[in-house]
Image 1 (tube, one colour):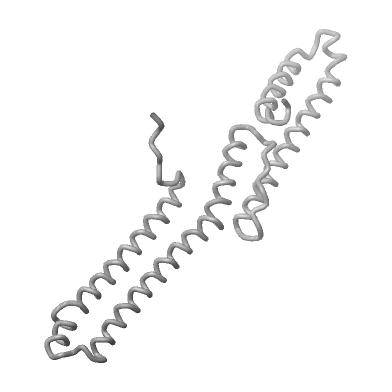
Image 2 (cartoon, helix red, strand yellow; image 1 turned 90 degrees about the vertical axis):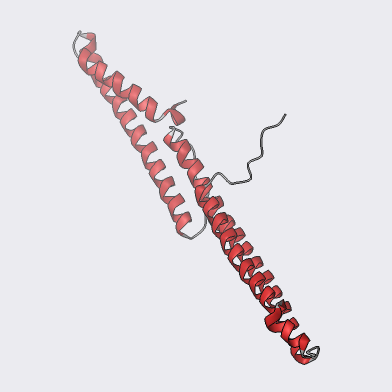
Length: 185
């Protein structure tokens, strides 16, 4: 059979947002139920009905109940909309930044983060891209310097000298290969 469906998002921040939204929704729903029970109970409609209150006061109480229901619906819609906007404007760009930085930490420096806009997340993505570009430049610069040093050591190696320096260069180039494996492939 198929695997279980996980209804909660992977992101802890997104799960917290859902929890807070549901918690706020439960609080408002509880308040609406309490007010409805109060208005329908013996204290308001019961008293009005016992004194023949089928007139304007009873209708006003029913109108208050209706307006409370509409306000609750609008409030729950607003909370849902805020959650949707938060997910779209913060969680999706943040998850793309996290995916990109995971790839970079695994050594894939060919990854560039998409432009996230002109907010803080966009600036973070641009700065991470700048760091990656600087890292690539540094690895290429050191690699070129290793090549130049190897050329300079060529005559010394021909005379049987400079073996230690050649080993150090081999180790340095191997380390550079590990750091820059994403663009040395």
